[in-house]
Image 1 (cartoon, one colour):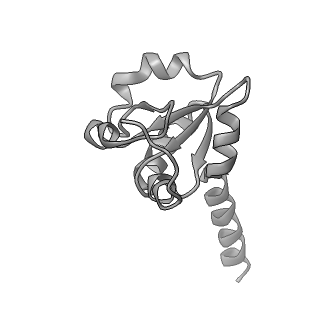
Image 2 (cartoon, one colour):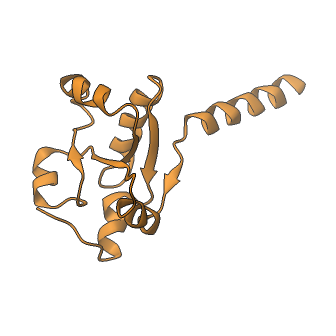
Length: 123
């Protein structure tokens, strides 16, 4: 019984460590007007990005990290706010970068929530 309790505690701790802290839409909008705005990363496909994205975002598809390694390395000192359509691809991207020491935040609700709140996008 103790073994299973210990295993459960360790598993929950590991899951908590892997989860990226979230930033709300409102907090991101406020941050983007500050003197030190975060860098927003849209990890959707180039086609989805072209159809509409958060102003100031750059497109680094979650499955093309290697192709953008120089750009990512140049952004390592910044806080990166990551989003996709619903969260799955952003999670994959965040797990890949978190092991390299990037400071990451996840946009709460991703693009689905952004659009549901009728927040502005650019093309």
